[in-house]
View 1 (tube, one colour):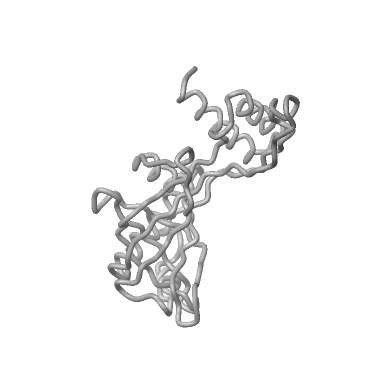
View 2 (spheres, rainbow, N blue to C red):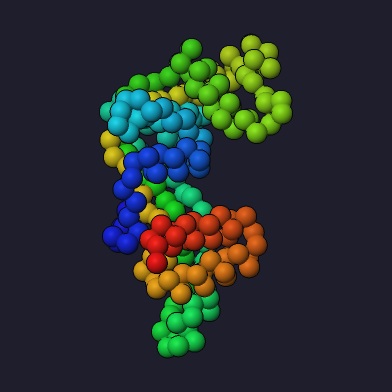
Length: 215
């Protein structure tokens, strides 16, 4: 991923927290006929240190699942808040007119090699962890044990799970850091006026980046 220094995020804790919050990733790997990609929910394990591991699963008929093998390198792409930035939001437009549109976004790329395949109790524990993560806001939360055991067993036989210890993580927080603070505050205002959830989340990140730098 191309990351100019102004947009680079190197703090491991920040990267892992973003991956955990996003919760899903596009996983990319080589296949016999070229690149393959799937969009999957992921479980993050803090071990092994320092980067931890990702566990995820694929439907058995998925050609990517058929191409997976121990030792194969995978790329997980996590996409955070993103949104269009209009040049009309910059005070610089009124002063010089030398502005163009852009996109702001958060992205994390995580790399690792398949170390093992999940089956039996390991696969069930992975699914229970994923369910607990996504059901945590529901009252009451749905649990795997709420479904008949034989049904869950049949569903487990229809998927394959993998564990991937991470070897490298890189993050890009493109939040208008290459503009002066007046323009960046204009971006915050413009995004907030959009009013949708994605724009508001992105506005918070742009504002936090300004605040972190101080005056």
